[in-house]
Length: 161
Image (cartoon, rainbow, N blue to C red):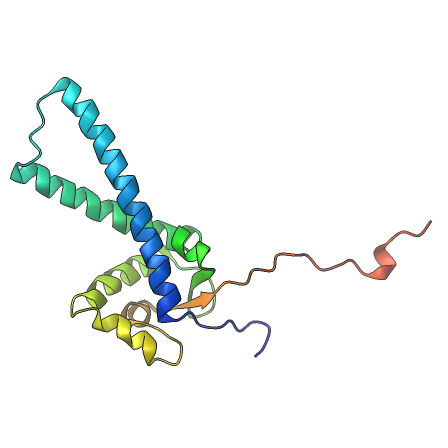
C-alpha cells in the first residue's frame, strides 16, 4: 500500500460514528428545546400538542440534523462522531467535499435508509466500502491518518557549537 492510500472504513466503525452523532444531536436538541420552551412559557401559553408545534419541531429537527452533517462534512471532512472513530469523508480526488457534494451525500443517505437501510448494505460488498450515498456523491470514507508529527530537520540544519 502506498503512502497516499488509506484503508476504507467499514460498516461497524461508520455505524458507531453515526450513533455518536445521533446521541449528540438528540441530547443537544432536547436541551435547547427545553430551554426555549421554558423561556417561551414565561411570556405566553405554549401549546406543544398543536399540529403547528409538532410540524414546526419536526422541520426544525430536520434542518438542524441536515445542517450538522452538511456543515461538518464541508468544513472539516468529519463529524464529531467520525473524529472519535478516526474517520474522514473525502471526494474522488482525496480532497474535501464541497457544499453541493455534501448536500447530495445527505440526500443519498436519506434515500439509502428508506428501503430498510438497504443502501447501506452496499458497504459490505463494494470494494471501496461505499454506500449508496457515497456512490451518488462520489465520496469515500477512510480511516484518518493520525500522525501529525513533523519530519525531523536535516542534520545540516542543526547548528553546531
